[in-house]
Image (cartoon, rainbow, N blue to C red; front, side, top):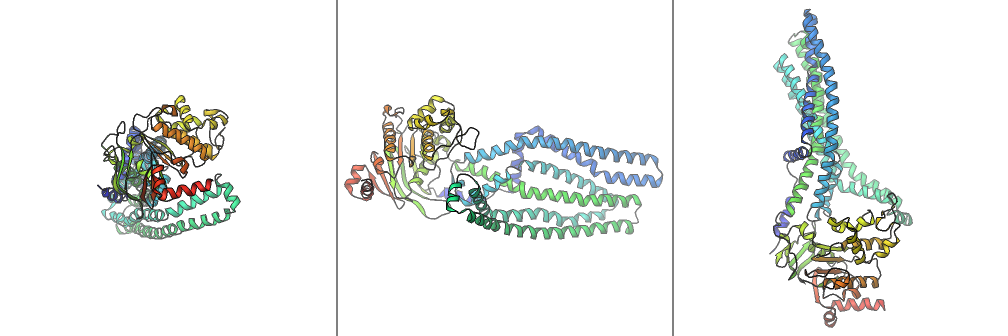
Length: 612
């Protein structure tokens, strides 16, 4: 069985969802977060638009009353002007305060939603595909302004209402004034088209922009500081950062200037039509001073309202629609990857894990880093994976952890496809540590405890995990033991060495008592060979059910997978898998492989000679 359908799904994931449906989904997200505030803020935005839009009418009535000597009309118009001015100010203040409160609340909801989405994606493909990284980089920048999209929508509706009232007043004078809207269409079109053009240019250059930021951080932050100074590469980093920024900004600037030229031309067309409408009403129709004053006031406001409306539409097009589309894409992407997972993870392993015809190529490349791998990892066994750099060892571990689906073939857990098991549930039965571990700068207790979130604050469990990793010496050297804040950039935080971080990462990997799969992907590279050997002996004993090893016994058929370059360590494994050129070259015990005299024996002899 192949997973060609998964390859087809990847093509679908490249497509961005439609703008309008994405906008609607974003609106629903805001309504779910703050339903009452959203409705009140929207209503106030519309209500605040009316007094301002009616000012042209009050001016016409005031002029007509003065010219006709109608005192009642003058008083009514004056009161209308006063009420409109006061109401405009009052409603604007109330609306701004309400919108600010809504924005503050919905900001947290949106940021949490995007963070939760990225963390819940079943695979790590979106962290390694350049086109996805670019898309996510733009979304991360926009998530902090996505709260403005609701305000922008409310404001746009308010401007449209003002525009509708103003057009109605103009049509009251003469229907021909509707042509002003026709001449305003180019401004609407350029305003909605312009941000999209600029956004395309920005996204095309997103890789260069990310490189510029990376080089800036490399040149200015502490972790690379020593090497930057010793190597003297600082000036080169600055020059490369400027070159990368220029590669991003050049096309963006060109797109901005081109769109600005067309936008200016559209406004020139509308300006000419506005002047013509005034001439038409005053000279062509011979209208009275009140009507001419209404056209002057309404026409001037029409241009302002159009400018504000198309400006907001442009903001929506450039920030909201694009941002909401990326958020909708991330939602769809997260949902789609695990949608076929409908079978439970077993409580224990009886047969083990089998790989049948498994091949894998990283997204965006055609080179297979694993080819036609057939492999059995028996339940209750210790399996070591060895091979030269680039042989596919870490990739195989990623597939076992369901961080990627195979390009072809399938992975079976006790005869059931791993693809049919929910990723979150499967990973809840995994444990282990990796060479490229992350440094969680929390209190030491929590740095270890996050290895099993449900027992994050379980002191005895954390202490047990520290013992399993042989990290007691690290905790003893910390000023406050497990309560010590790690990381010198935090108040009362302390720096620890790379080897100490690695032991804490090991302890984090051993928080779970009964994992079905324990993965150790070169997690002790910074430790000496003797310490690594002693640790791995304990892991192997635990897998085989020896409770004296510092773990609970293993009646659940736990499989331990070791990846190490040290053959003195892997020789203890029940089964050694030798990878070469993306394929399985040999499988057997240490004695069997040495007797065979193949690649494993050759590599072992080379390393043993080096130690001697």
